[in-house]
Length: 399
Image (cartoon, rainbow, N blue to C red; front, side):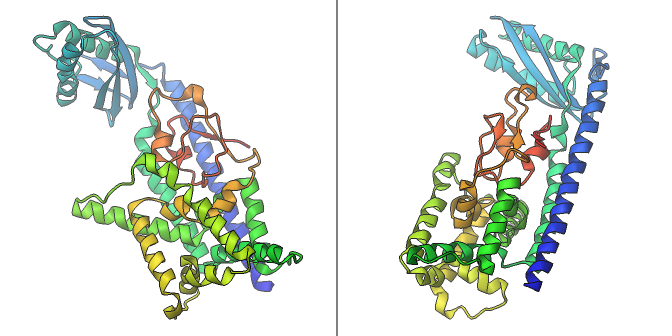
């Protein structure tokens, strides 16, 4: 019991560190937003007729009249350079003319100027795009482009998460296995018609369930040793792909929604075996039993060959898809996803401030969530904080 108390104190300390970090990130975000609001009205770009000078990074939007009507464009500026030009809408333009005129977009980036030549055969559409780009400069910055610092912010978050994961992996590597053992033990007792016994395993399960109800699946996002190993293998995979220049196969997005249901099937199977008094099959053949033995430095795995093979297959999946096990196979994650979430620390999307076609939160979510609602209380959310970090206008955490 003494060891458990010490480890619980360690858990609270790390949770405090996480809370302070989140508060600091939010404070910095609010300060940047205040600065951005002050600079939004400043002249942030100018055109001398030959070159366009952008004095401030950001997103610029403007419109101009083309062949068939209004053309709207967006300029993205990073490090005082024109990084991207895109057409937001040109509904009434003739398709062939518009496709020909799009050459201007590349010319503008190459010349770092909106003063480019029209395209022969699509003069009116070309002029519409050019005038729209000039109008964007005239209008000035319409959005503060915090998304430009996405890589830096994700790197900071990743470093912080890895530090927390290493701390828990060193001091509490078996917390996942013990909590999962609590699930099996509780179901087995119910199947026998016996009263629930508050063993260490069950107590740890109840503590984690309580934390999940209050804070969301922060255990999955930062603490779980199985999830940590998955993150590390995925980082290794990214490093190898970057160095070799070869890309591994990608699981199609439409498949992921269906694959997420697999963990509930796994949970039902585990519950069924334990309820019927056959829990030893789960112990003997499951990959998390092997993982538990390895984290406890017990490498006598001869009796668990099936579990070893399954664990190796999961490792392969971890290298193909971020949070592979958490999304698709984790029975404990299935338990946590079914728990109710108090409206305290859930994610709240400020939809009225979203960029048109931004989708930064959706694109960066490791568990493939769709951020269509104002309040994100989806049980699949692992509270990793990435959506909060990458959002140009911040996805605000409720308090």
